[in-house]
Amino acid sequence: MNLVLLTHEREVDRPTNTGLLALNAFPQWCRRIIWSRVSPDLALKELISSHSAAVLFPKPKLLCLSEGRCDAEPMENTQAQLYLEHMPDTLIILDATWQEARKMMRQSPYLKAADKFALTEQADSGFTLRRNQIEGGLCTIECIIGLLELKSRHQEVELLTQAFHDFQAGRQSG
Image 1 (cartoon, rainbow, N blue to C red):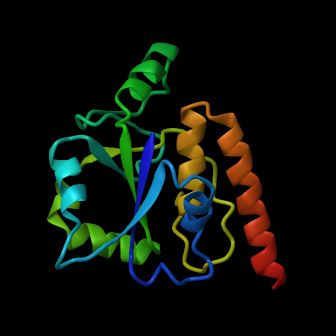
Image 2: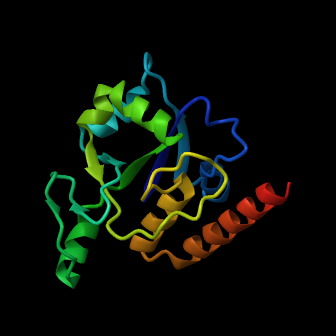
């Protein structure tokens, strides 16, 4: 699994940016590209146009495969296996506030046209450091943890879950 954090320029210096936790812990499979409306990253556009990558997109409680089929029914074991088989090698996570992420999608035709991949099972967000969170929305690190859980990468899940907990505790007390 490879992750690309397509990061809004304002997000880079925010002390509440959780994407940095994964970037620091796993640079071998997690990298950052700064989003630009006028100069999109050409390699990223090529990944998207070749269907080698998909944008992680919120579709709570739906099974969404890269071909665009969505099912509202709970997944059986065979469906879960099919879901994982259709998970692209590279996932793009919009690393921004919800308002900025919507703007990024709206102003980037290549992102609108990209295949989408959604987490099917998600808990409520535990992110408490920002106001104006949307219901059912997860922060960047929670999305990454959810993807790692899908892939049964338990050690990485444990490490990032603890880092996220420590990050929030440190920010709230500091």
